[in-house]
Image 1 (cartoon, chains in turn brown, blue):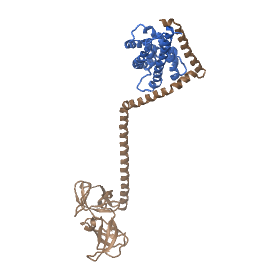
Image 2 (cartoon, chains in turn green, brown; image 1 turned 120 degrees about the vertical axis):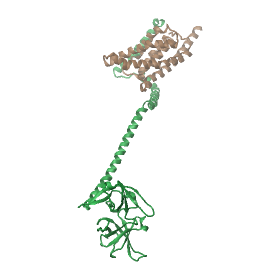
Image 3 (cartoon, one colour; image 1 turned 60 degrees about the horizontal axis):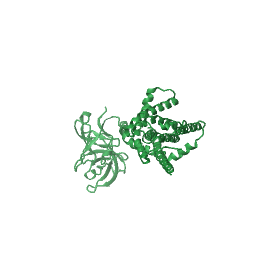
Image 4 (cartoon, one colour; image 1 turned 90 degrees about the vertical axis):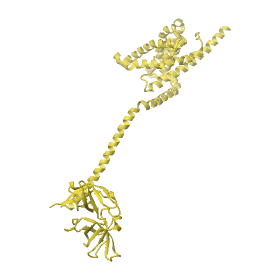
Length: 278
Length: 181
């Protein structure tokens, strides 16, 4: 209580009032208190340091407090990314389907009497003697033995075995395959069959050529007929080599099929002709 | 000769106090104005200066606390205030209030915690007056819950270690001297 009775108390009180009122009045009139300004300048590095430490501390704490939020956000973004990836994939599928449908419509327009069934290549047997292709359609889909298998590019082969929902097709490059054909430009008739020498290269052999008038790159089509497994007019391929067989002395040609049978990825958009209208 | 020796000892003591309390107020003022306001985990800014003044009043003397309160108030307004600069008066009156109790208790941490209670009430009253003056009359309960209570909790929590800081400053000073002019 001595302090309250001392003159120092009055001194402190006056000092407190002055230090409170003077800066307030100066600020009220828009001025700057020099002493306050100087104190602020001196304290600036310390306050800067303190705020930097506080921000660093905040960053450290956020690693723990916002972990769950960031985790949830991350999962949501992953799900969104997955969704966009699926959309993109579906778009690609739709594009392919659209392209296939265009080709189908094209093929259908060119052959309005054919009844088509689309099929998917699911496996291939490849050994020294046979190269059967397996498709995902069978008897329940109207497939029967002998049905030609085509794409918009050309002939693949014919169905040789049928199950309920599968079928085996013999490609035209197989040694067991044989068909009557004609050339598009010269009209020469011939037989195209598979060859052991050419099968692995995806090529066919043309023999029994009716006339010598053959041209390179001339297109070869199926001749059709009652005894033929194939209807007339299906594109087989094109002539890529003409030569004389050394063994028989006969005019022979090599036909490159329109569908590349050595590359399975090329065998897409497959249609099986399972009937004829009329 | 004896009188001159006493005067020089008192003078040296005075300078030691100025330096010790000056550094203490500088650190606590920077924490109060530049550290805690930026801290997101802290619900409100604690009044560390009030805790320091309480410690000085308890461990040293009300006289030292009174002088420090005026200077600390001015410093706080200089680095953290704008417009109204009433902190010197506010802290000075706080020391007056707390000095009524500080002389009657033991100089211990328990006494410090005990005296923190009226300090927090004083702080809450000042905050309420300031808010009412700035924002007009407000409903009391939301103000208490959103501003006054968080401030009281933060002040109570962070002023506890301030006691030990003040003790660190006061201990080398020895017995307090009387200021004479």
